[in-house]
Length: 197
Image (tube, rainbow, N blue to C red; front, side, top):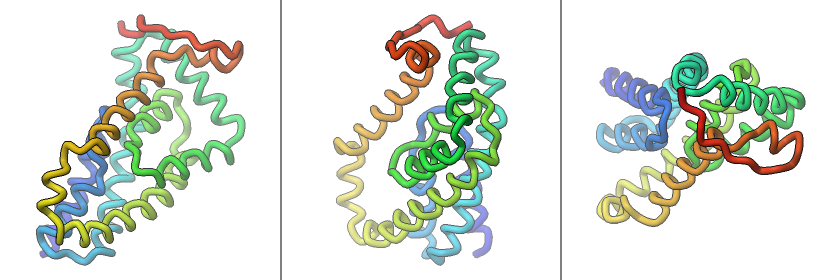
């Protein structure tokens, strides 16, 4: 029975370690909780731990990905965005907390933070609070969902799930293709599609 929780941990870790939009980690947590009848609170603790570790690892390796695949100018642009966020750490942490509470993929947030080399201490605590809260709600709703599984399967490609994917892709588009230095300093939106090496 304990190995079911290992599955929850590694499922959440894998879902949150990837550098592209993926289903939220709570989906794998809900799946295992329902499939094996696991204790909800244990799944929350184990799953959030795996999720946080996955996002921490993403923070650590995203600068290497950016260095390999993005032009130096785009790296500097995203780093400038991180410097602006670091100027007021409390506002930055409140933004991260609010963002983590929403049912939005946090991949763009962690990619941007990793590329801009924001220290994990400024992003992880707020993420833990937001993630624990939102996953707690999601897992308790998962019990309700298990009773209505056919409806969920029917709505897998609902407008909400498609909208979530489109929003995540749009956030990644904004992160990579907007010239953030020009936007912040000159209040002018400029797009730059020549970011790849």
